[in-house]
Each structure stands twice: as structure tokens, then as C-alpha cells.
Image (cartoon, rainbow, N blue to C red; front, side):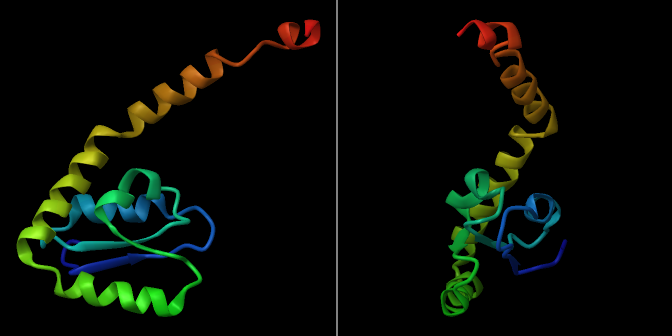
Length: 114
């Protein structure tokens, strides 16, 4: 993954978050991420990727051309933004959010009273 020009991550249903995140962090060539809208990481990485619908074969082909021919400055801008996003929203932040969500759940007692 260090040397890709374009990384296509195209799960049909969720998953493959780590592939897209690992790819953008280790890549040394300002590779372009072509990312399925169904990928779990799309919410985080979608704005700086080239989005594709997972079952749209023709749309995926159409997305690959601009990804392969994208100007160097745009590739670099997107790659920087993707790397920064993954570094900021790391596993520690994910755990904090999970614990916060759990702490904010109503207790069984409170639900029973309702």
C-alpha cells in the first residue's frame, strides 16, 4: 500500500475501514482513495476521496479515470487531509466516544419507570 497511485476500497456492506485508513497513512505517493459510500470509513474519509456506489460497476470505472489523472497538487491536498483525519480520529477517540455513548444510555431502572 505504500506505493499505490489509486486505492479502490469498495465493500458492498460496511467493513474495510482499516484498509482505507491504513492505506492513506502508509502511502508515499499521494495516492487517491476511491471509496465506496457503503464503507464504514466513508463518513470520515468520503470528503477527500473519490466516492463510488458499491454495486455501480460503470460508475466505479468512471471514478477511476479522474483518480488516475488527478493533478499532483490535488492529489497532495487530498492525501494530506486524509492522513490528518485518520491521525486525529484515532482508536482512542473512538473508545472515548463509545464509553460516552454507554454512559449516556438510560439505565434499566429508568426505562422500567417510564
